[in-house]
Length: 108
Image (tube, rainbow, N blue to C red; front, side, top):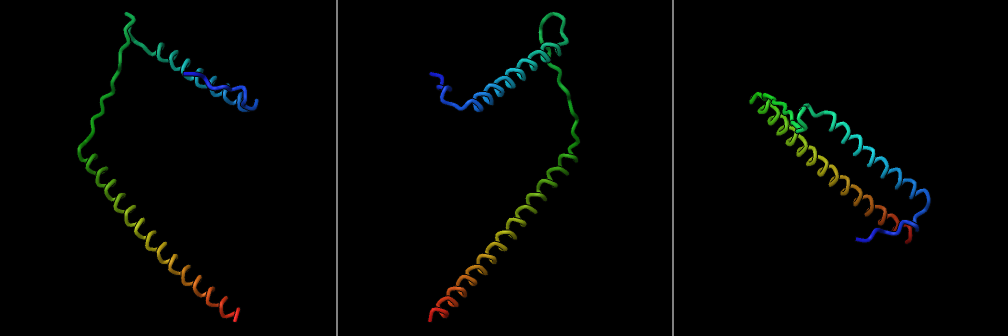
C-alpha cells in the first residue's frame, strides 16, 4: 500500500492533520499507561474484574412495556405527520391551480 502524497495539501490542512494524529497517539499512549497501572496482580499477569448486576424481572417487563408504548406513540405520530403532509400538499395543489386559473384569466 502506497501512502498518499500530502505535499499538495494546503498548510492549514497539514497542521490539522498533524494535530489530529497527535491527539490520537496521545489518547492511545495515555490509555496504555492507565491500563498498565490498573492491574492488581503482583505476578505480572493481568486480571479482569467483573461487576455482577442483579436485575429484577419486573423491571425488565416495565422497560419492555415502556419501549412498546414509545414505539406505538412514534408510529401514531408518524401517521399524523403523513396525514398532515398529505393535507398540506393537497392545499398547495389547490392554490397552484387557483393561481394558474387567475393568471390565465388575467391574460385574456
